[in-house]
Length: 357
Image (cartoon, rainbow, N blue to C red):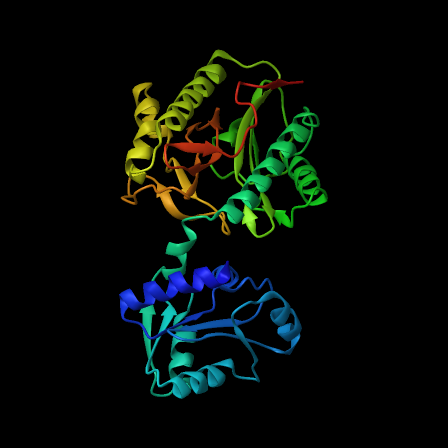
């Protein structure tokens, strides 16, 4: 698997006229090498694949990596990298400009001597946008775990509980069923706080006759899931039902019509036009969705600013919402994969308005 990824990366390097690429980003490093440790550099040239790490990880790297020369570096990995480049006659080195600080850039330039550092944007990320079958299987399992977590928490949620206690219960459930952690800080936002799009769990006590928005995911075997459901504790008002049904209509419409060949902007409009039709356009201020995989937010985006063309193998969220300050808010979110003919929905939690308590 990693050998195929290196081959594809070399094709991108050739297109950019780069002789070599140094990979330091933890996510990109894991994607290209399969290494799960916390320290190391992958150096990809047109002919060789090197992995440099320190004493702590030399055994782990040797066990996990295929097709790489594993090198244990000393106090300065950049000196080892310079020696490898000079040995190969390479005078230009691409680096991940989004993941290297200015301070590191200056330091690297000094340590690499006469080797020119060339900024290279999003090369590995471009490969990561299209998931292979092994990745999709892991992501399905992560989505399944999120669904099981939602089912569990709906049996626990009750008036008088703190939002933070609910978030803890969800994380314990996910971790005890195979997750490394949650995909991000779990959002539990109740009552008027549900109008906060990213209202991370607080000490607020759940009241009666109010929304509770749950946005969470399982970080499982290196990949993320991301699920949002909004429930009512007690009896919903007409306003609760109105807002919920509009968001549900928008989300179902998007799921029915998203297809390969569509741009991220076109996918976003599918939700946005419906919400605007009902007069809530100003209450839907974020994009319809985002890519997910090894990271919770990655390319592509479903937004008004995205011209990326949706392609089979891309995994994205579809998550319209309406947020009314002082009252509450609703978001409904599923994870999907773009297929040759449309989409496959990875998450399956029920979306009819659930009333608890």
